[in-house]
Length: 232
Ligand code: 5RP
Image 1 (cartoon, rainbow, N blue to C red):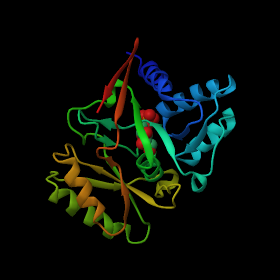
Image 2: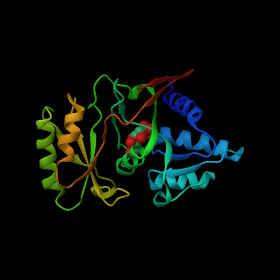
Image 3: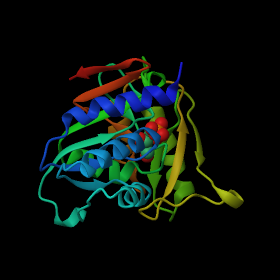
């Protein structure tokens, strides 16, 4: 099984949703990278689109490939967002934020007419929670916030969540594009993702969390010989 081929094939299938004149949210991560590369090929052949990147990483990629970008503050409509996911369940609920871009990803997806998720088959799960749930928090008071995040997850029936601040070189907390920290919450299983999302949203210091509930309308799971499209 080639995960890379599956990612590429899911991105290929997502190109079908692109139309001339669209403003398109450009996701972050290795699967979204394939989509941006394919979009760049279409642009080189004459397609007219404008991209709204969901991270500085994707901004740099799109710029290097010649995909025209538009300042997010100048956008009045985003027709389509194509983005990857860390987990997708059968209701198209997602865990995102493995690449620490969840805040911009959620703002852009929420503002889009359509969110299309592209993923390899390993991302399709029966229940969310095996992938540690990323929660973006303010640096101020993050250890206090981490305790409140623990309480919130317990109230959402998550059993003994384990919470770690995501660190990088020198064991320092990584800093997101928004200047925040990420708490990675090992949940095992999240029995009620909507409840967990609501509980987390109520914690002061939580800027955003990686549960995307009811946002994706189309999920494309790549295979070695193509892709399967699920519409919700
Ligand atoms: C970044 C994300 C990514 O979409 C997610 O981590 C999936 O990445 P990849 O396609 O590399 O597996 O949410 O914040």
